[in-house]
Image (cartoon, rainbow, N blue to C red; front, side):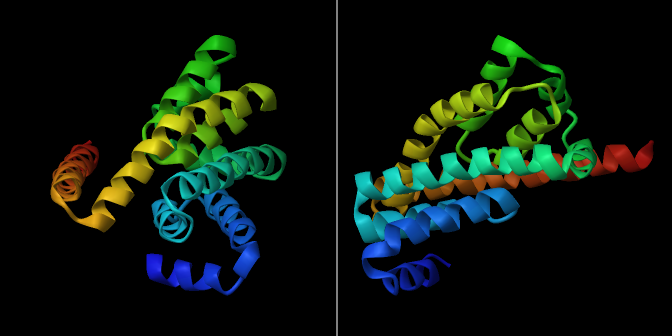
Length: 188
């Protein structure tokens, strides 16, 4: 996947960074495809710091654009999508400092589904300015962690192997928890 993105970006030469930002915005709006493949491509093409910065811009602008779109045209369908995430109801009802903290914390988690924070804020009472600030600030540590993990995995030395092992354990645990929830829900 990353190689395909790298090849796509190379075709645009000096506009590759802009295309990457646009691709990141699109992927963030759709909310299904993980952005770490784009981050990996950016790091491979532009180096660690510039690649991380380009990914940060794309993801931040994508979150703001998604917020505006969800709020403007998809509010009812967004509310329906949030039924899969009962914890997001807390964000829907939050305002001010509490909303800022929730969005910031949700954005800080590098592998948490970003769509939950965006949908929850868009459906709720959060202002665009508060969302943009909390989302962008929370994205800084998350993207640095993601970029570092991607960088180390691509180098595949000891740190990269440890990251892969931790991700595999986390994934197995996540699948186990989801299966347990399904069993519990189906028994009710």
